[in-house]
Image (cartoon, rainbow, N blue to C red; front, side):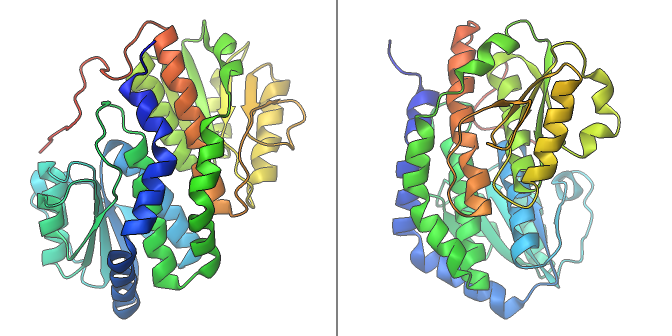
Length: 341
């Protein structure tokens, strides 16, 4: 059968990342140098949807690597409420594939006007978001025709990580990014089809992660909703024990996205505990004892390791969507560019 646009774009992820790394050098170096000069006390992120999940990933990456607190601020503060924020001591990162959502642009402009160092990550240059920020980075994902974002999500995170590496002069992260296209190429071919049977009669499921992998869990939960009409919620593997665990009984599906980082042991312990309660628990970790193991690519760096987890998930959710009778390229009631105010 003819591949969906979504499947084609998943397959293009390694190429898109390599293209960004090949083309982005001067812009990334300039943004990193600007951050070193500014030495921001804090950072804020401006985004919605998948782009906001990319922002969450970068929040953890920046806090872990640069030691600066990062907060997501609501675009409606500028577009609806007209709030005036004092961001002079910080930096702002706005992420928008189209670069033209009015509320994102309004808050990006407000951040710049308040004195923040502004960085835009976008797949569209020129665009209003690029004009609003002092540094505009082309994520170079290429055309993305499927409504559900895939390669633009990955490329946005890679762009943010590249700027972080340039800012902090983190050579280990730079090496990990240089090797990432090959790892992503391996991840594209991983088979997560063993998830299909437990999801067949499920009315809901949990996606769990911790640290940067929590951002991947958020993105995965959104993709289940977008492409398959399946209710999925993302939680920190620690937070799920503070209430949501009450719903986990019978064969309730729980998918744990586990990176090779400091949280691996604790996440696996919780997933194994949920398995013991009767949940159909899955884990991307060889350390799982009860939870069913899903294949993964170990990249050798905790940040790129977490990011690589989204690729086999995307492959599964695209095929699952088709198996459920949906068209993943055209989710019900959604469109590619959402222009909220």
